[in-house]
Length: 396
Image (cartoon, rainbow, N blue to C red; front, side, top):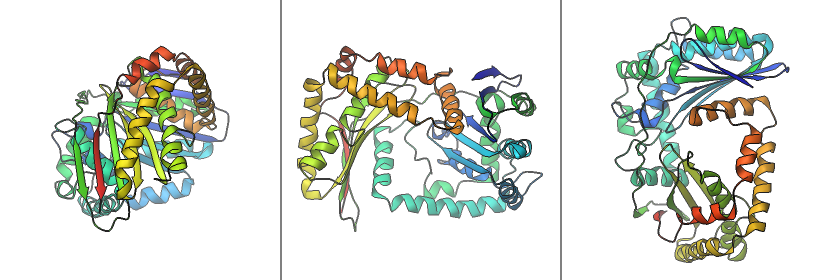
């Protein structure tokens, strides 16, 4: 793996490979957190519009060319960044990557396509609203991150969709879709050619926005008709991904609810039969993070489940020993390497690592960080986790 800073400020990463498949992932440091002066959801709307035409290619031309190359073009938006990716054969590499760069940096945002995409994303919002788990997390984050740049839903809202227009989309795009705000992660055999294509993009400075992380404690019930189960999420504020205890929280999460052998699954499902679906997860930002606990159950079982979770949390404070930590770290390291069985996963990892840490962590370095987690680290991290948490329930 090699990386270099391009003349136009972009970061270029090259993962050497000799296969016939090439990958390019473009990470742009813009997401929901950057929408303060724009309609909510504009980062995600922009991602959709990137496929809708440039001066040289209309939307149907772009789809036809993607089909001709037989490649995979994909994109997604998060609260803190946006990613565009391509995977294709080496023989189509130059044309396909040139098309991707043209789409990302020279989209024209045709008015007629904006009107159609407003309808498409409205249906996407309805799809989320039909999923109680997704609705729960979206509304929960709006409350616990209230009055911060992380509170907005990625898709926006039905009302904010109506505020999207060619002018504000172009303003948002011109402000953030610039080379020095991007990381280009490439896997293939022609790094000089691809770097030269990227370097032809103009240099322009872009502002940097902080996440404004602030966790608020809440306890809220949302009533929604026609649900067979209650869906519940609990949250503890924890450290950011820059904190020295970050890996300790990863180990705790694995023990607590990160696998089928974790305490949540064993106690709530296997021992008591309260749930079919339960897990824990960690979401971290530059200035803080959250440990989430989720379960779905009959509304009559909610209190029993929460009592079990309280006991599990107490158990975490008393029962984790060196042997359990070592077994968990071994499992995590095995999964780490198993998750990197193709070049595309390396491309995405290198880009995301550079985006978050401004450096690239190799698998060996990540293994070492996990392996260094001690019982003392676990005990320090557990001080952040107690039986006082924010919670939200959705039920009929």
